[in-house]
Amino acid sequence: YQFPAVMPGMTNIFAYTEGFAFGGLSVRANAGDLHEDKFILLKEPASISGRVADGKKKGVARTQISRILLVDGDVTDPASRKFSIPFTKIVRFGFQVPTSDSKGNYSIHWLPAGETGFIKANHTKYAQHVISGIKVGAKDAKMTLSPGVLVSGSVYSRNDRIPIPNAPIIFTNRLPPRDTTIARTGADGTYFLRLTPGAYTYETLSANYASVTKPQVIVS
Image (cartoon, rainbow, N blue to C red; front, top):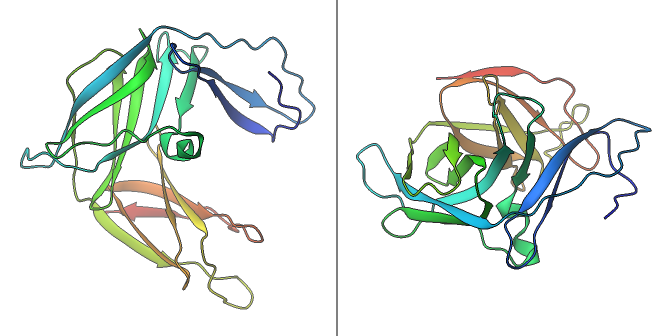
C-alpha cells in the first residue's frame, strides 16, 4: 500500500479483510518525511462485549461505540504499536457502528486477539464515556453513563459576526487520555453537547475559518 500525500501530524492507518481482525498502526509524519516498510499485521479476530447502564443500573439502549483505540503491548510504552478504528466514519464502507440493544448489551467484533482496547461510547442523552484498558476477548466490559453537563454556544466569523453553520467544535479533555468530544453547529451557528465535569480546551475548524485561540473552559 502507499499514501503519496499525507498531511503532517499523526496518521492512523488500518486494514481489514474477511477472516481476519482489523489491523493497523499510527505514524507521526513531518513535512518531507519518507516512511517505508510499515507493515500491518492482521491477527485472528476476537470480540469485546459488555453492558451499558445509567447511574441506576438500568440498561441504556442505542449507545454507539464511536471509536476504539487498540494497543499491542504495554499500554504505558510509547513505542507500542497502536491504531484506532473510527466506526462512525467507516459506515460508508459497509461497516456497522456497534450499538447497544434494548437491555444495554453490546459487542464489538473483528478485533485483534490479545490487544488492549480503549473504548469511546456516545449517546444523545448522556456525556461521552471512555473505558480504558479492556483486553480483547473480555465479555464483561461495563460502562456507566452519566448525564454530564449540557454545554452550548455559537460560532461566528470574527470580523462580520456571521453565524458559521456545520462547523465542528472539538473539546479536548486536559487530563489523560485527553479524549475529544465533537459537536457540529446548526444552520444558525449554535451547538450543544454533554460533557463530564473537568477542564477542556476547545476549537473549531471549517473550510474557510479556524479558531484564533484554544481557550480553556471548566465544566462543572
